[in-house]
Length: 145
Image 1 (tube, rainbow, N blue to C red):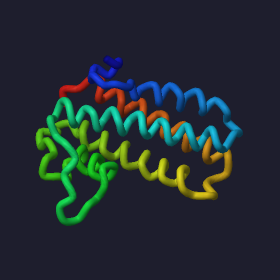
Image 2 (tube, rainbow, N blue to C red):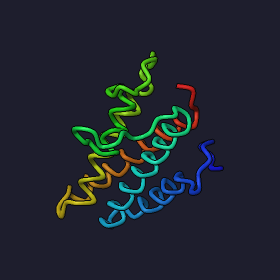
Image 3 (tube, rainbow, N blue to C red):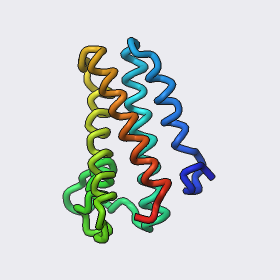
């Protein structure tokens, strides 16, 4: 069992640890890009597993318009799917979805685009993604939302 409290074969929080180590190389573009990617996947997989194990929800089968698992998870937490919990009184789930969406966009950019921001901007973006990932994981660890 990982510190998240969700039993899994791999502790996805280790990706966040790796992302934080990679981010220490403030002038290495490859490490900053990898940091963003790993931080996102830590948050994505932990959020996905919470949806599976706590909410007892799964990704929909391909029926009609297929939006993909990453986009679905964002919409699920933002309350935009039929399966979404509707008792998000304090906006915790919605804000979790917003953080996942921002990180998803940043992760796609660094994983697929040849050119991204100047190294100084990339360093700031890495810091932002790490903060968002920690926040998402912390919310999941607290649970009960």
